[in-house]
Length: 97
Image 1 (cartoon, helix red, strand yellow):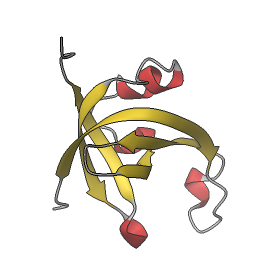
Image 2 (tube, one colour):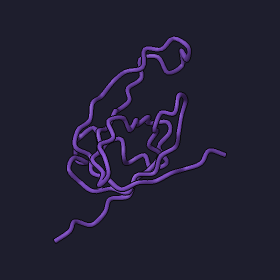
Image 3 (cartoon, helix red, strand yellow):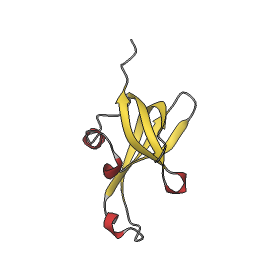
């Protein structure tokens, strides 16, 4: 079983990308997102989002429509190949007054 980790942060930018690796032809041409996250400790430039890895499928359209920018989240992620940080779920946090 893959271990799930978590951290707090805010999405400050994202990019849509496509898979061009021929080692997994079943994924060739599929889209994914690379999120840039600002945490209290550091800036994380690569939290990767693949639709097939998400536990909460509502996350994908929120990213597509840019509804997630500048919001605080508790991110749940797993480590993938080559130690990549892969988003599996998130929980939006209430805004501070």
